[in-house]
Image (cartoon, rainbow over all chains, first blue to last red; front, side):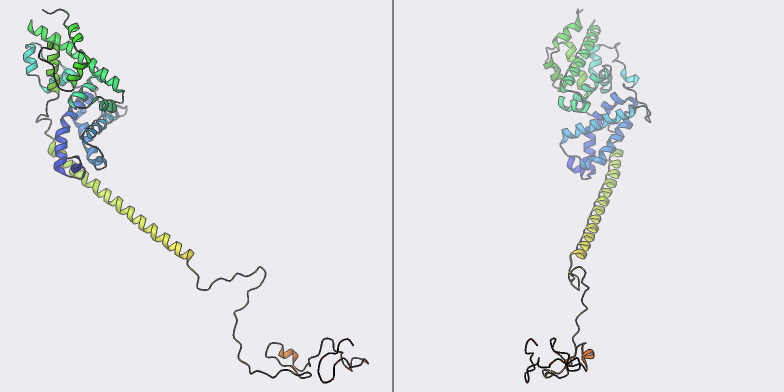
Length: 178
Length: 184
């Protein structure tokens, strides 16, 4: 599919886009906030320009895609950039899941946006690592390459973030049952 | 009511369980509620794309076609230019090499320093063979000396200047042979 897309096959590129765009958008919502859609469009344009020169399989493509996205966000964060990028997700989405419902019901009906908003409440680095591992489906070494950190640091950040989430959810479910 | 729920969740979430959750494999049924809730959150975050997220597929594909065709035409242009440059360079190189290395129509003759080049040899008109010069006869030569020697008799270098030169004997010449007789 990658090879076909690289040779200009529109259908193959559409398939590639369908597979990779949702995780890319979710990642960008975390790191680029309101500019996520624009940044995603720019990333895909860059992919379209450079895909002919790309060599590697689908895992390598995912790493490349998220590396491009991260670099673009870093460019946007620089002072003097055309757009200011909020470092966290949109405020409305950052609210925790409603606590007036019972916790079980809330978790059963948990939307993707609510789940992402919950992850976004974590410190930036932990949230980024968890999104890349869970949503983008990347391995520790691949995430380490994207964020430019040691694999051990990536693993530790992910575990710390998961523990923090588990603590919060444990409290919520306990309050919901009471 | 459960006491210290955070501590219990923290204790039970081992590195192995965390890796299991990150890999999307969920948790066991008897896992603490916090971990089960976390598994649901992660599962919800990793759900396949919604319609809203996939709404821009047509626009993305159209942009891809446009960008890819432009990139392809640019690549073709670049390749054509490269080929043209190679061809021009090759032709120029070949011409230069040929002009330097090819033999000239008139081969050069190496002339020692200070010696003027000889004029091109021209065949002289054929002259009928003349009889061998006899002593005392006028010697005519078809060469350039004919004018000078015309009317001058050939004399031996050691021959006496003759009776007109003084009173020396003229016996330096052997009679009848025309040869010099040695020392006079």
